[in-house]
Amino acid sequence: MKIKTIFVGKLQDRYLKEGIETYRDRISRYSQIELLEVEDEAVTAKADRNKIKGIEADRLLKRVSPDSVLVALDEKGKGLSSEGLAGFIHKAMDSGVKEISFVVGGSLGLGEKVKERADLILSLSPMTFTHQMVRVVLLEQIYRAFTIIKGEPYHK
Image (cartoon, rainbow, N blue to C red; front, top):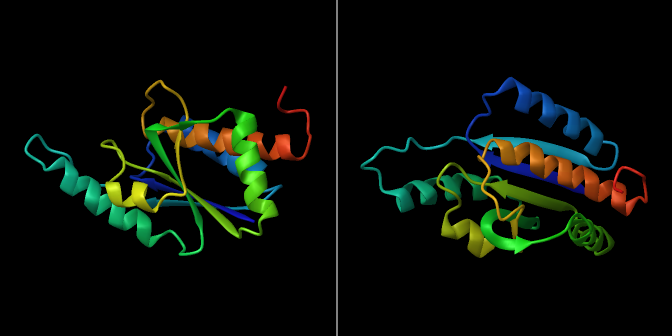
């Protein structure tokens, strides 16, 4: 099975890039992984926020394969434990799913089109993280899920 992550905007911080590369390498032992970025829209004081989220949603959805299971990250989504995420991924693997796409919106969040297409709307925490920081947290949790599935000692 393939894991695809699709993020709005370019990652700037070196320390986050290093964390992402660490977890990309770790995940690649269990699954093919693809990390994608789509362009973000400029947010100004007068900007129509729903229009911006709609434009970014279209860009995100163009990168999601039609047969991919789509997990949209949203602060109002369903909270899962690490074991719960592992169970979700394991069930998808057992069902013959070829790809799971995890989608993270920009600074304004996700457009409704993405949420409507999503098979799961997931919240990583009741706390708020930057959309940049979420990348590392998400990848760590995907890696942790694979170690749980494999019964490896990373998750205690």
